[in-house]
Length: 377
Image 1 (cartoon, one colour):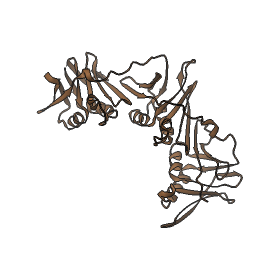
Image 2 (cartoon, helix red, strand yellow):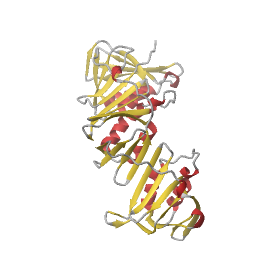
Image 3 (cartoon, helix red, strand yellow):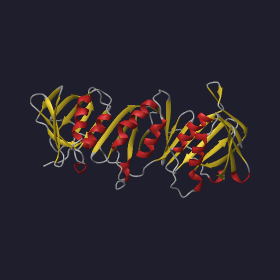
């Protein structure tokens, strides 16, 4: 194999593939990046068995030559070392050439590295995905779905199914995440075949890494499924993730259909008050904040620490309707829920001191955040 690649293009592609590389693997080849050179271009592959990423570098992009393939072939190069080498090369042009015993030469200007590689035949083959179970969505929309829900998935392995986000596809995509203390829910329309119905659970880690690769464009991304994995595909990127096994709990029964109280507030003002109150909320109390809706149209936000002191602040509400509101909650969970809502005005629905409450954008039924109160008495 002998290839010539633009260094900036190579660095960006390697950085993307590195998101799938893990040092903790029993397969030596998986500590490396597989470089495949064909007459059409160069493909870089990385995998940790849970996530697999393939990036294609075409020979030309926007009528500019970004790569040349002098000899076709493939090699697996130790990922961390290869990544560090190409970032520090002096010139815009990088030459990669393989010799005997899987030794690769990496050259740029007057610099030449000879590094030991792995036999490419030992690298696991990427799966083939049936294109019948597929839908498409703009990258910016998919990125928003991930960012709106993934934070609410659990980090605890005691219930592995909750470490993922449930995607229920049925004429639309309903994404749901919960760690049993909170819940995040997002609905979007998708370009899907009329006969496609499925419910899958995608690991939190996979979605976080995928989100880093997506941009804010309207370029479509294809989403394809098998029984055990999902593939996200753009023109030059393939992102595979395993699916979690098990049954995701029915969370629809947790969402109140009615409420006893409703408070409308400007998100920015409310968020800033929670941030200030959380400065005194102790870690051992899970950053507990108290909220009281007052008759004068203000919301009282307060927190206390026996070691530090107390903080009390009134925030002006746009409206307060219904029964008296007195509730305590985790500041961390509240701030993450507020961050996931993009509108400036929000409405919070309450059903009592110890019942779950909802946070929603005003005039938007596609996004929902649910929090469980904290008992403070």
